[in-house]
Image (tube, rainbow, N blue to C red; front, side, top):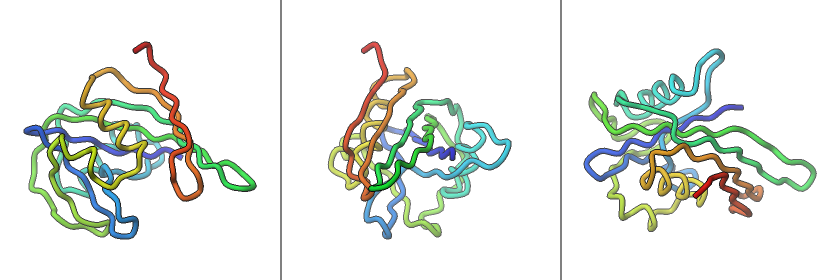
Length: 151
């Protein structure tokens, strides 16, 4: 399975989606459709969830996500698209939850999965692609984060 979420950075703020079902903030995104490339998925999903069309979008992170269940391990690929501009009118609420702009300083304080926080912070620091593996418990508590980098 390929999942793509998108980080939009504009005016020192990022756009996040609050999902009441999880009580956490997320980058807008979703599953790739057959034949779509990663950027196409990021653009489409972001537009569907926010009403905004990303401009200057590029691949920012490639993450292998592993969830360790008792009897098996589940694995999927998570890609992060980063953009610095958008057009359109923001939809403040959608079927998933509500959208809001947050200052870059707020990222450390918001309730979100630690792996997502790691990706956001790294992409705010650098334009280099981030490659990592994130290993979670069945309840999505981060067990281990392995970053492949020369830093």
